[in-house]
Image (tube, rainbow, N blue to C red):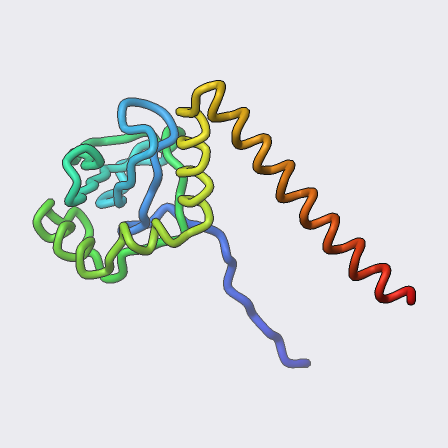
Length: 148
């Protein structure tokens, strides 16, 4: 028999300690962590952030209303209280990790773009045209030097 190389899956599992992002409902766009798995459709979540506007109270949430993120709170005990979750949350710097992800950056950009006025959108368009023109000009200059 030959050697077998076993690789673990890279799937995001519904597990205690997994950080989730709410995509539907009253907490849309907020982060929370899975504290307990109730059944195959519901989980108990808690999101103790420092910012009161982003805090998610401890409640049962439907799995269809959340998206699993790659961030996990390691060694979070099952059904931990809000205080224990808050300590692990702050120790692992969840908000800092989340803000560094490209997912969060894209989300912030989308929110910023949605809030623009018509004139601000026009200015963004003109700036994009200017940068595109400058890039094309520099690429053409490099190409002409390469041919010569």
